[in-house]
Length: 318
Image (cartoon, rainbow, N blue to C red; front, side):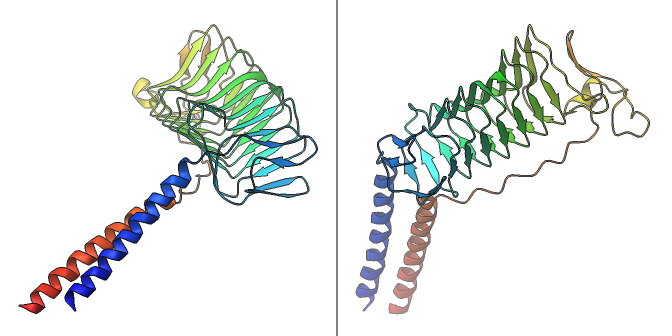
């Protein structure tokens, strides 16, 4: 009887291990490049469901997507798009009025590429473990909002004008959180820029408004190179986590919640109205555990339970 029970428990453990193995095989099985064609058709996968101009993920996809059509809503529905570290995740090239939202992008050269494309929206995505999370080049009037951008080399790169980067969490990127390269007239407002090697790098840029952001525990909050920016709106600027250490004698300016001493970045850049307290920015929802993680946890539970039952039955036998 005891042997039969032990055999059943071992069989359960083997089934769990097999499930994990199958899951891992499915994860590394790459699909061919997927296209949303100009005529609206989807090529390369059955995991994107189309309803008019709305394209919705129905499962995780391991590959890349090229959008060739205007006025598309690509809704990840919380699923993952994963690469092998070489290709780009989603490419919007010379198209307009598209939305990419609710998607997890991981292990790409660049998670999302916007090239020569205007009036697009990148909303509430997770971009992690890419060389660069998001790249906007020669594109204008795009909005990047509510994204969680973490554990990339670079978070966001802007090489264009008249875009809005608002209420994103940009954290733990090994090099730059936001890279402004020859970019002008962009609005960088209300972002949590934390724990990056460099929070923002500004290279030959002009008239970018960088205001109401939280710069917290970056190795260097800002790097500038032959450029200047607008770091406040004339009444309020940004929150700097090292402000009190740098300016221990500063005081509040007339009960305004603003320090009375500017935060000097370099001889051409300063925040004239640094904030005393962090800006309240919506937190990104907690990540759900990956299925593989749950399966491994199940194996541990089964193994521990099996060991406990074996010990129990041995004691009863005695």
